[in-house]
Image 1 (cartoon, rainbow, N blue to C red):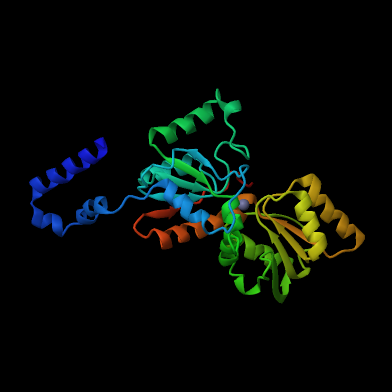
Image 2 (tube, rainbow, N blue to C red):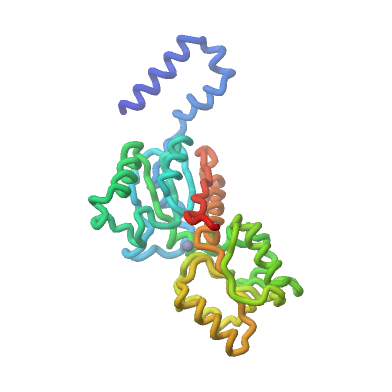
Length: 300
Ligand SMILES: [Zn+2]
């Protein structure tokens, strides 16, 4: 309420100061008229996205608010992989008070914070969000459950591989003759990564690619590889002691299986681009920005 009074005062003061004729032809008109629009709340945006998924997630879903509340009136939205402190600062600079992140905010899958209560990093981040009244919603289970999966759809788009993608969304049948080296170069360029880790022969020709973004776990990566028999398994994140060892043994047995690890963030950031586009389509009046979290790790 107090804010509304201040806004009105602000607009009245401008009108008094420079005259209404100037106001009408200035960019401030859109600023001022913005207040006449029906306000959209965090809760309304979340509820509309949830409708993209035919079923409601169980109580154990991680797609909950990590900061702020449903009633916050949205001034702008930022989509990203991680609501890092840097991303929060960029949101503040953009005057956005709603961050939609794909991954946890507080360093564990369920964003439990009890164990972090006396931690200075946690406190700083939680206080920053509170100070600027920013809502953070994790959109993980829902975006992975849209048809097609929003993350994989964004990834295929960014790789320019939609035309090679099978209906299952994880297999890509590339034109014959692409070497593993050429494939790696393509992944590095399109996903903006400096280096990848890999197992394989760089001259080996690759046709059937299994791309599992994110970190679905070694068992899923191995089972899917075993079932789909790709030439190359491309992963976001792996545990070295699981998937990499499986691929090593498969090669020793005589299979032509290669592995490329591009990094969790690089493999799923395209999902935040997908989300930003969805928001722009549904809420064109709200400024939405995709702010990539970037890679946490540097390479030497
Ligand atoms: Zn994901």
